[in-house]
Image (cartoon, rainbow, N blue to C red; front, side):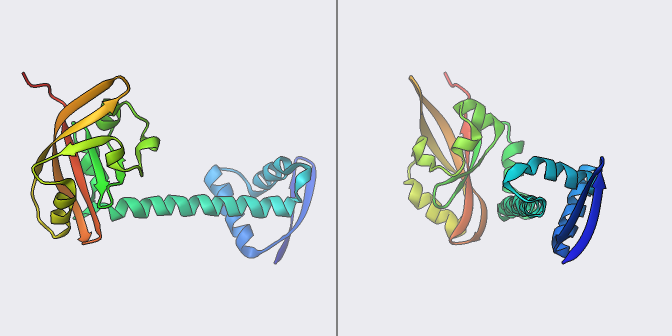
Length: 200
């Protein structure tokens, strides 16, 4: 524990906190472009009567640490979708046509901007949902068999037709299914590339 006296705008705070809390507060102040006393005063003012200043500072540091953990988890998830050093999401985002990244368990991991526009859905609502929640995918092979082939390391493109139900509309389109990343039999992702061009 380290004791420090912080003064800001005529207020004086006598604080005894663990060294790690002081380090976290100093890092947060530097990131926000504030002096430590400004940050402490801001947190203290926001604490109100429901918390002590030291309790509010500890809570601030805990929330900041949890936010950082979530950011790191997201970065790890993005890196785990990497194919030869290039994240699959980057490949999907570079695609001009609607493109979805789907897991072996059929969960939508990512959708590029073209897919979100074409489907007229919010990305937050789409991610994590089963692709079968949105589409019927018809191919010469059942989807489960195609995914099993990808899991065995088979590199190929499987043509398919998809049926998408929008409110008041049934939309059919061609699509191609191809493996995007295979780290192991239980850890793979594949792409659903949707051809939205109307053919006569």
